[in-house]
Image (cartoon, rainbow, N blue to C red; front, side, top):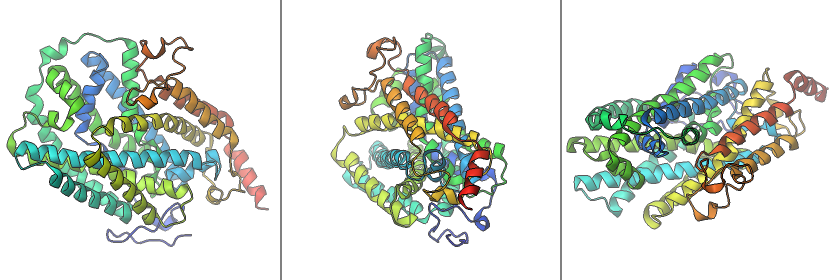
Length: 486
């Protein structure tokens, strides 16, 4: 057992996959607000509003899709966070109860690739955002600016990831306050750009488009975080209020996106130029029309909001790497992921201008198995009404087993069905997806359901239903645990 650790911002966290010692569990569910708000207050949420409206919806349909998608997806995060509190262990350790100690390496691998991918995207985008603003100011936005911005962002992200939980919670609280205030100023400066007559004139879209926009929003927001949701709630005392854990995780994650996405919908509906510009240069489109004096604060809010997301990703990706079997301390795993992140970001920023779009398609592809895993994780938590067996989470011969082939098969099945119901145009090498759209009478890859992303919902439902049927009751699990130790 890892010895108890006194809180300190200058001390490297020694806890890794282990169950957090009782003496280290502290705080209240309300503390979860800070990391989740900071990770999701990005002004890019405004650009996402334009993407949602791009499904061909009216303004009220786009707002409905945004609200339902954001709240429901972060509610999934809140439910998964309960597992972290109940087991006092990282998300991908608690998941072992569902898949077996060794069988859980499959979802851990998907989680690791997904989080490393997103942290790479966030860090690269922060560097490019800085260059865009510097160009607008006439200060030069070339290679030197990009390199300097990349170094600064990497130092913040990797430094916080290596130091661990205490440093991250402190950094995220600062980012929350700074970005929150500056974002309010940004919204006030752009409010006059909204044309209510243009907003009201938008025609109503199809209900297939409404479903697609809702699922797209879920994938864009909460489903991108669900595999890390328990990594921060694990430090709370086990007697913490369950509704409080769910509420503060959901509220912290959803509060900023709800405001920003809604504003983005109205702004895109008011200005075709903004809507078109967001798809090619989101930072440039967001900065257009801002007074010169606010361009530097705008750069600060843009970069810090991306840092907030990348910090959570690198911490959780390190834990996922450990759960794959890396024999190293947590901080070493964070450094390994940091090296991969830097290599990917350098490639995106300085080598390939066309890398970002296909890579996002790759990340969306991984969103399908993550949705299946999320359904299974929530079902396992619901089925096991009692506490988790701490020792069994690390013992392949214990009651959770080595590999639970039934849940693993359900995960693979849900992924196969999900990919068959997702049409991904982000890269030509993903054109094989959507193979079930025709056979199931959904109009093929060019029908009304083409961009409805039904595969994400299908994977979520199959994962949940399959795990619900396959998870033993808490009573049976504990009886097995007792008998195995006699």
